[in-house]
Picture 1 (cartoon, rainbow, N blue to C red):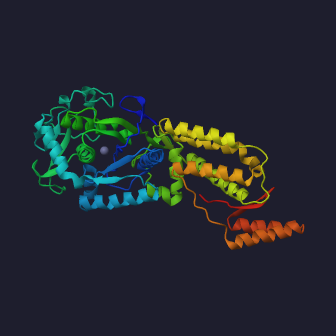
Picture 2: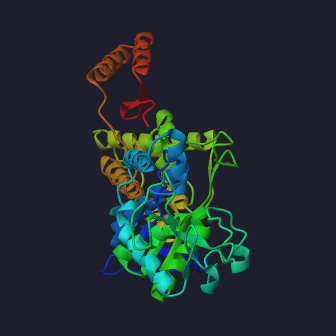
Picture 3: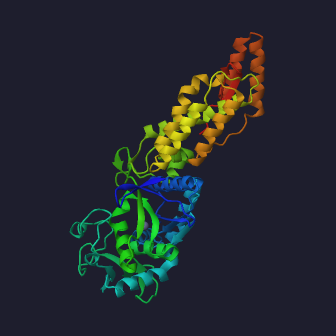
Length: 462
Ligand SMILES: [Zn+2]
């Protein structure tokens, strides 16, 4: 399997080994419900890990939870609750959302507040090695001391100084881009009494303290949204490589693309902020997963009503194909009229080729449609054995993408109506038969008259 490495700007081979591949993905800052952008990133990595594991890669998947941070403290103050209890509430909500989205591949979640001793130790190491210094409100990392600062985001130290995104402000800092490692206590903020003094960790240091604790100073893959590349991931590289003196901190950096809503950046001020919860009030979790996979993980993900509709149609099409195949499989009249083996073999090859080429899920999905679309009008000409083979092939590939359809047999009432309709049709009572078709339609079923007999399917079930 080849993966695009944001650090080297090249596709690089992921080697199989007996030891697990160590993957770390940045978790959410839990000050609000997780939004659709989190959904995109975590579904993408979940599917990547599921797929890689199915292909024989052993993967350890570690994810932090930022449960102490400026954003949490600010929101808690607005709400008049304690920062740590607000963080607990939204950590639980996040796990709940992930469960609903079928994100099941994370091996270990690590909340920052459970790793304070490890964070303190790493800051002390950075101070001892001359990379960190103390000023009035905390300990800071001196980016001018780390000569390679900017190597991931391809920025120079000077350019780094224009950073405004979550870089901490204090006039005593040595360089404008220096970021805080440990923040001294301010009234009303959560704090820990440590050797560094009473206070709390900065944002970037928690990730490296956690990853060093579980993985050591070097590991295989670091993932996260592209918006975290600078300064967050740049800061992580600086911290860990400065602390250990070992390079590279991480071999492969994987970044998911930007999330857009109707071509605009999602933000509360634009009024287009969409949480996973709000999405799930209107659509199923399966649609979000499929929608995510229809985009390459590195590409921008533009969320619009049209793309949702496309996703719904695509899923409906797949589900209907599978139901038709099951019907054929159990029909005594089905017999082979043409060969499909070579088409299945070609689709199989195209599917794996796409998945192994930097996890190209849209092309993998396209390979399935390239197989089934031309067959739609000829499905009834397949034998039961062929239908079974095609159905198995599709189910296996969908399983690799984390897509499973829940199907249940039609209720007795619908099956009885269908039998009665057949009888009426046999007696040439077409008007009455049509009445029963309408009744079935009201129950949510469509009747399709096929060369193999009437086929009943649920009209809308995604
Ligand atoms: Zn992070």
